[in-house]
Image (cartoon, one colour):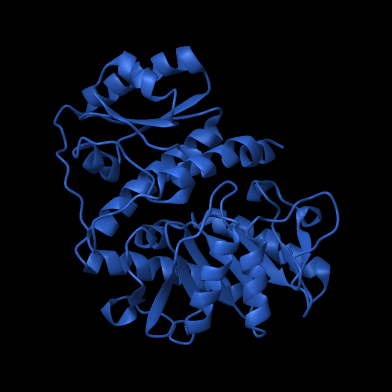
Amino acid sequence: MESKEAKELVVRAGRELVDSDLIARTWGNVSCRIDEERFAITPSGRDYLTLTGNDIVEVKIKDLSYEGDIKPSSEKGIHAEVYHRLPHINFVIHTHQENASAISASELKKIPLSECNFKYSKSLFSDEILCAQYGLPGTKTLRKNVVAALEHSKSNAVILKNHGALCYGKDYESTMQIANELESISGNFIEKNGYHLTFSEKKDASQNITRLKDFEQAVLAERGGNVILNTDPEILSYISLSKPLLPYLDDFAQIVGLKAEAVEDREKSILKALRHSSAVLIKDLGALCWGKDEGDALAVNMILKKNCKAYFAASLFNDPQPINKFECALMRFIYLKKYSRLSEK
């Protein structure tokens, strides 16, 4: 394939994935094989909707080397492993999609598709989808764990523990299909295993929104930026547990923080909680999600909901275990010092 064509397909895939809610902002990455030696991949920390073919980076499969000033995705290593080990594969998508990510927070080692009522493409999925062990994003450990899963997987997708999913196919079209079917399979699987949310919907819901808006104004007065109010069932169900929300997915640790505090509906408590996190859970009301602009606030809002869903989905199979606190602190530090600045550019 010509380099220009491969880069155009990567840009196209990124935009389609954003439109389908399988990725958002700078999360995940997309690549296309150019030939036996090279692949084209999305750059590090850049919004998919702003990308052009000139922003896509060519990377050598053998040693991950590249030319130019634009850095390729930090997950280029797992893409290279797919292309190296599977010569018939020409397109790779790594997503943080909601349902597959929710399953990734559990201790499951595989999803048996015999327990799925969804009609999937048997040419793309075997009778199971494997779950790779956890590794910090962009590390050799993650790469090694992906390789271990690839060596045993007969499906064209692998779930990455506490992280997301890796989908790969012979071309752009089939890989997009795989990513979409994986999300439907994952959603069907957790529902079949009893996924449901319990929360009491208050009769005075409008008063709750008014109260949240009062707190929103207090946050904006102190911090500026942008605030989004969240009263989704996943959020309200978790708030009913009356405990802080910890990172069950690594993008929560990166973008939201080490925890989202659960506090009473008092202005002082809410402002204090938001000094150490980008979100706060407010008893009986909902959540406030803060960002320096609307895009950041939307990202926090989406990840907060997804992390709650991951907790409840994992609870179907085991006692959910958050990611190691030290690793969360490291991811948060790297994100604030590196990736958030890249996305600003």
